[in-house]
Structure formats: C-alpha cells, structure tokens
Image 1 (tube, rainbow over the protein chains, first blue to last red):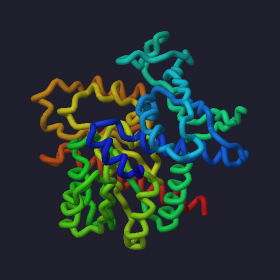
Image 2 (cartoon, each protein chain N blue to C red):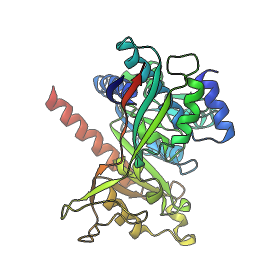
Image 3 (cartoon, each protein chain N blue to C red):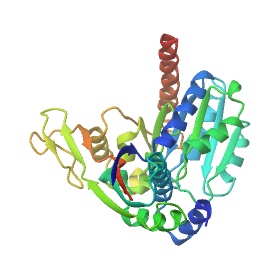
Image 4 (tube, rainbow over the protein chains, first blue to last red):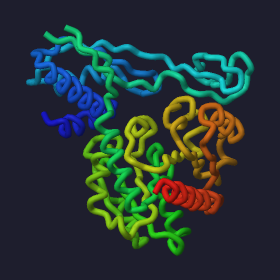
Length: 129
Length: 224
C-alpha cells in the first residue's frame, strides 16, 4: 500500500494522521542511517518525543508496521521515550512541569514561561545487525 | 550494534521549508501560514483581508484541504491568484506540497501570500512551510480551553486571532482568562479580536499584517 493510500484509509478510519508523515520521515531517516553504515537489518529504533509534539506512540507503531514492509527495517521494534513538558518561569527562573490547566509558576505565581522540554521529536539511535 | 543518530525526524521537511523561505524572500513575498480547527474562519479571514487590502498590496493564496476546491473557488471570486492543494487524507500541509504550489503561482506579482493550512489544531504545528509568520485562529464557539488542550500551536503562533466575537454574549468564553493564558505560554504572540461577519476588529488585524510586511522588508534590506 502506498503511503498516500494508507493515509486516505486511516483518515476514513478516523485515526490520527500526522503520525503517518512522522513515521514515514522516521523510516526514511532510519534507512538512510542504516545504509550509511552498510548494515543489514534494523532491529530496534530508539525514538524520543516530547509530550507537546502530539505524537501518539500507538499510531506510529501502527503505521510503521506496514510502511516498513519489504525494507531492512521490517520487524524492527520501536522504543518510545516520552519527554514531559518542562517550563522555566521568566520571572524567578523556577523550572516546573505545567499542570493541565495551569501554566503559572508554582513558586511566584506569575505567568510567562519558556518551554525548556517537551517539543522533541528525534531518533536517538538505531540498533542494527 | 547501536548507531547514534540524534537527528530530528522532520529535518527533511525543514530543509525544504528553508528552500521555500529562500525562494519567497528572493521574490519579496511575505508569507503567512494560517492555522485553526475546521470552521474557525480561516477562509473568511483571508477573504476579509483581501477585501480590505486589495488596493494596497497584491495577494495570493494557497488553499490546503483534504479534498474539494470549495475554498479556492471563494478566493477566485475575489480575482486573486489561488492554488488548491488537496492532501488526499493528510491532516496538514508539508513543505514539499507548498514547494510544488509555489512553482505554479505568479510569485513576481504577489507581495503577500496566505497559506491556508488544513483545519486541525494539532498536526500543522510540527511542519514548517517556509512562512514568515504563523497565525492561529480560535473561534469563540470552540471555547477558551483550547489553549490548554493544544498548547503547541498556541506556543508557536506569532499572532492569535479570536474570530466570531459577535457570538461572545451567547457563550461562556472568557476573553480575559484566555489572554492571560496566552501570555503565559507565548509572550510574543499578538492577540486580535475580530468578527468576519460584522467586520469588527478586522482593521487592527490588517494593520498588523501591513506593519509586519514593512518590518520584514526593512530587515531584509539590512541583510543585503
């Protein structure tokens, strides 16, 4: 199945969608890196994603299974490392994890933060044969 | 054997976005990526802007939708060059789609380009297109809690436009609370309150568009 056909199918099934593009890009990156080292099968992909990236691990897994068919990454397992959102108060410098409905600083109660973690979306490493 | 990679998954998209950016800068086209959930008023705001600014600046529009050309037809009636991208299922535009669209637009005749993204508050956030500004529209009936539910887009936006403010008396939308929450998550974002139905607040928005264009022109002159 082409990725476009897969996209159309998943859209009709009501599945989250940007994971398809994310998974395709991840697969391209993994295959390129594996190819560079002249290695054979990819056994494991160590993926890091921030809470704010909105990436759903189950969806990535789902898309990966059929996008990777017939490639050296077929059958590889994916390890998902999720990074929680972290903010730093611009006023007092306090570093904290924002609550669902509260981005105010728990220390000085002012609003205004810098996001210091939670937007990551990268391949940390791959394990090959 | 473990191989360190440490590469952003969307770096391929980012590279194409940079190419788009270089092309648009070279052609002196100021580009705004408009994002919102479906029905918040992306096309309406673009149409309002075209009507307000058509004697001041030449405009063009890229319409992104999963399917149909409904929005492109509306823009075409305003006699503005428009190109429809149908993503065929993808919930966001990617740099490569915009790259193809740019090849088919008369960029020499366009000073201000709107890219209307696919209606979605999650997915477009991750994909840079080569735009100068990201603008997020939130409409009053959607509720003021969306900033907490979809923080990434609100964090990334250069401006947030609250649309359908004529409906404020009929909802519990807390403008003050929203504005405070926005300051918390994004200090640089400008906040506009508009109604594309009553035209209230549109001038504030178009003034910002024009002044942002001017500011970009000044900085690019300095660079060259």
